[in-house]
Amino acid sequence: MRMSDFSLTTRWLIPAPVERVWAPLVATENWPGWWDYVAMVDETAPGNSLGIDNVRRYLWRTCLPYDLAFELRVTQLHPYRAITVEVTGDLIGIGDCSLTYRENEAATELIFIWNVSLAKSWMKLLAGVARPVFVWNHRRVMKNGEAGLIRHLTGRSELSL
Image (tube, rainbow, N blue to C red; front, side, top):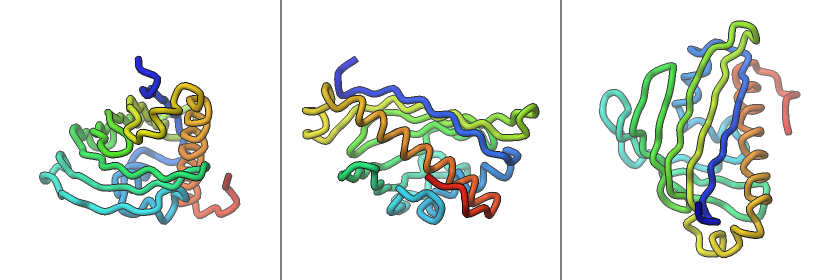
């Protein structure tokens, strides 16, 4: 693994059935309305009727003073179970998201796995020493997304980071 390679796993637990979680998860054009760090989403290719090859460009703000711009292309989609995307732009790699309803927790568990490399030259240069900061930043952005989705689905505004 190169210093600019990252394998990041995040678990969300959303107190709603998979069917309620799926719709806002795949409607990424609406993410800026509930995920604070998503600044912009533009569809650049609609993909087929199943959503395969759908491409959207994202601009992400972060907890740190830098932005990330990248495109996600849907390569696999199993409704209500899993999505796999290819990432290009400031990050390059693969992202997977799986959804499972956990009866004992009355919640949907989402597992996000990102295997990406940094493409910005300054980030690659600093990856060795800044790795813990980049990982911390990713965790904060993802935690904010979890809280935002819970707020979005429950209408509770007091959940925030």
